[in-house]
Image (tube, rainbow, N blue to C red; front, side, top):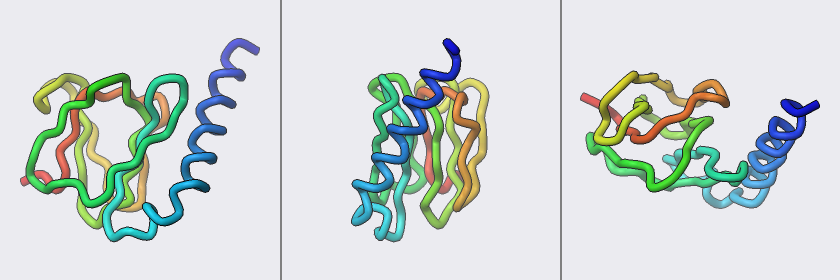
Length: 104
């Protein structure tokens, strides 16, 4: 039961964010992730070939861009890397501290 509540909260937050960011999802390039307390965030048209550090807890990266992205476990695009191809998502529990869009 303890695991079920956080999972429902995360999925509910993601569903709410996806339903309220219809205009954002219509953009050519959107990156979506889950932040603190299961709140979903989106970034439209992220810069390519640049590392962006997350300011707070981040997990569940979803790539709605047209290029690959890589999420990293540490800031400055260091640590373990997980590649996310367009139209896919990293496992929901995958936490990350930085992300690079369209890596070289």
